[in-house]
Length: 304
Image (tube, rainbow, N blue to C red; front, top):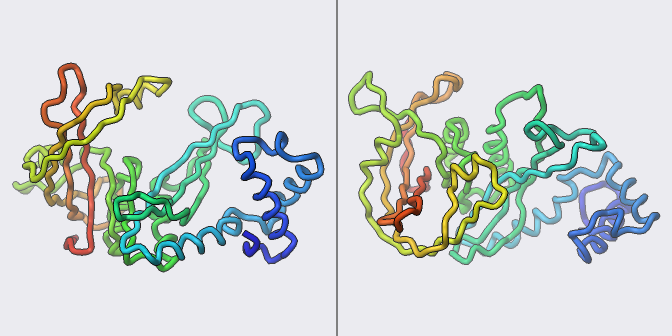
């Protein structure tokens, strides 16, 4: 970590000392872990304009890229973590979380071996976001922006970008396809698609309902207790007991229609390969496990 791009050897040395201290107890806060003099030095360090998240992360990214060189396929997993704080104190620079509390969002890209072992190789990118009462732009833009920063590192040819439901947005789809990136994105919306009869309206759910199983796999489903999850999370992901599920897998190619609210500069349609996964014969009283994702591989043609 001593070669961080701070432009000042003293800052690099200070960072190295702080990291050595923090790894001893990563679950502890700075005030409880550091002495008064160490805490003051830490505050001076983080208050220096040269100390940025990108500069701190740069040596780690280089090490991650070096580990990726030996991998034929790397999964670049994109996801957002919510970091919440109590509303007392009104920390400067944080945003809101629903009606109370203070929050900022950290959007990470984690490189993982694509050989089935899911071995973590390191972080490739990090961006932070704050939601306030005067939002600017589209929150979904961060998914595409982070993909482009990862691609700029020079690792694009053997990388497959992985995103959860929040990445399901027509804008990132078009951007990923235009740049020729490979990706797998879990779906969240029942989108409009090109209908077989011009002028009619068709939805993605109708096309997916026609998919035939080409493979069946038995998969161990972990239990999902109710816990303190929000009502929305309980609706999207109902509670369940752990069980061995028999899953069917099939795929089809569908052309999505551009949503009306998207800029007309975007292509009117984008053709994607969709993979549907659904459970065969779930136990009585248990919700059927299912899912669908959009994907594009380098061998899959695209159309506009």
